[in-house]
Amino acid sequence: MTENKDVWVYSEKPALQAELIACARQLTSHTGGQAIAVVLGPRSLAEQTLRQGAQRVIWLGELASGRLVEDLVPTLAAGVQAKTPFGLIIGATIRGRAVAGRLAARLGVAALADVLEFQWDGPALLARHMVFGGGAVRIDRPLASPVIATVGQGIFEASALQAQPNGEIETLPWVEPPWQAAVIERRSRAVSSVNLSAAKRVVCPGRGVARQEDLSMIEELAQALSAEMACTRPLAEGLGWLPRERYIGISGAMVKPDLYIGVGVSGQAQHTIGMSESRVVVAINKDRHAPLVSQSDYAVEGDLYQVVPALIRALKARKA
Amino acid sequence: MKIVVCAKLAPDASDIEIRSDGSISLERAEWRIGSFDLPAIEAAMRLKDAHGGSVTALSVGPQRINNSKLRKDLLSRGPDDLVLVAEDALTGADTAVTARVLAAAVRKIGAVDLVLTGEGSADLYFQQVGLQLGELLEVPVFNAVSNIEAKGSQVRIERSLEEETEVLELPLPALLAVTTDIHTPRLPNMKEILLAGKKPVYEWRLADLEMERGLEPRVEAVSLRAPRPVERKRILIEGSPEDAAQTLVGYLAKEGVV
Ligand SMILES: Cc1cc2nc3c(=O)[nH]c(=O)nc-3n(C[C@H](O)[C@H](O)[C@H](O)COP(=O)(O)OP(=O)(O)OC[C@H]3O[C@@H](n4cnc5c(N)ncnc54)[C@H](O)[C@@H]3O)c2cc1C
Ligand SMILES: Nc1ncnc2c1ncn2[C@@H]1O[C@H](COP(=O)(O)O)[C@@H](O)[C@H]1O
Image (cartoon, rainbow over all chains, first blue to last red; front, side, top):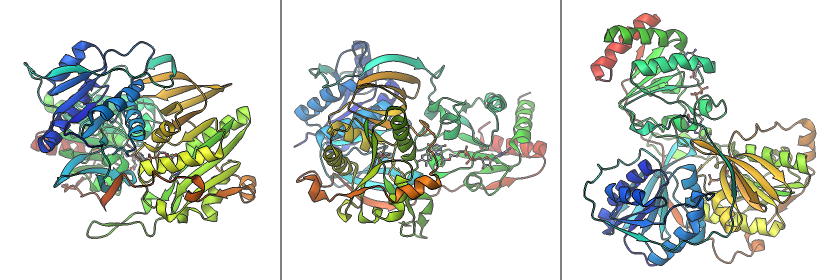
């Protein structure tokens, strides 16, 4: 496929889409093409996406009821084949990963998963991502075209909304998928959605918290700090104490807050990869040999059941 | 129901050795079944227990995955038989090549109703191979599947998305990539371990899979290194909880974060 120089982006999450547009603009400042966003949803969303900085929007219309975001794979594949962009960056949500993998298979390429940074080696694009559960950094060079990659939330910074965008909205013919799943039910799990990657302060309980009801104490600490609650993966997946979107790490959210406090968190690579760029890292752990302690600026050695209440008191006393 | 479950055999990440120059070595790493593939094997076994049929384990990779310990480990977890495509041409295969070899193997196995994969492989964890494989097989394919109920020629699945649970019904054959918490994997018992040595293992060559094309790499790994450690102050605060809390708040105030 001889590609042109445009970079397409797609995410079903508008906030992530804005970050991907920033990523595409960074790439096209090198390729010389345009940053083009694919939008599935109401026309108002297409217009908002132009304000987010897309130089053009490919608007696929609204998703018919009973259909899934993933149903856009054949349309996207046909569009990419017809218009031959340099690459397509997809938001690394669960649906986004499904779209990226299926699209890569259709287009005969391998998707670069969870890219943390793009670099250029002359005309060759390089992508950095983690392997071995955060234990190693790999730099990959795609050999086939188009470049398909997934990028998670919090990796690129969205630019401010433009008041007067001048991009155009075009359409692509919808291609019916060869099979369909029937949607039986959707149950929302998280009461409110959270954008952890935007949080300035994050309090992160881990398995050191013994019972679900003890999380109220951690929440009190988060409130005293005006921080967002995060967690390690076992608390979200497996125990189900907190929604999945709140866990930090290689398979969860990437955060770069000013302050991260890990409470009863051991600091395995799969977790720390998601918070290692925090400005100030604090660990509260009864084990001074826990890996997070040596990766923190300040570590309090002690039982979190004593340290956390004392910390809440100290913070309140300071405010008073 | 005829089920194929794909499991990757890969070096254990906890055995990575970091050299002083930041390069890493996997030479001494033990190869294991990916821990995220074990729940997929368990899901396959539960479906077989409930509906009958058979479970075939499938793994592709370099020659070293074809050893009796790994073969026994896979089979002692319940599958009826094992298909291995083990050739050094598959060392470091990218997701596209892996998915193509798996697709050819699934086609050769034939008349498969359901293909299961794990959430991600132990070494790469790209969460990609299953989705690519399903698309190559041209069957319904979903990731993040946390429950599977078979109903004749259909399956009803639950997907655990970031903010919602989605219940879908789809026709078989299908490919499902399951979550790590779909089931707790069983530990092989003595009987299973003894039985494992007697189960059939089919060793297929790439040449047997009639793959004339598709094996050229799509991605080249340029470098593999330990992550650069971030410099931290590493100040350890000891003492009574009250004193420690005061000290910490003092530091945090100085940092301007409280
Ligand atoms: C491929 C892969 C992907 C993964 N992805 C992620 C991911 O994205 N995010 C993630 O978080 N994990 C992930 N994991 C899991 C990860 O490896 C760790 O298992 C997990 O991060 C550990 O969570 P934890 O620190 O909460 O628990 P533990 O490791 O059990 O640590 C608990 C800590 O609490 C301390 N503690 C116990 N009691 C107290 C007390 N009373 N007071 C003070 N301290 C106490 C202990 O000393 C210990 O250090 C992944 C694993 C794999 C294999
Ligand atoms: N070489 C392989 N052999 C068998 N199954 C594999 C192989 N590579 C990946 N898989 C399956 O695909 C899933 C996703 O892999 P990955 O995209 O590498 O994270 C794994 O959990 C396995 O079930």
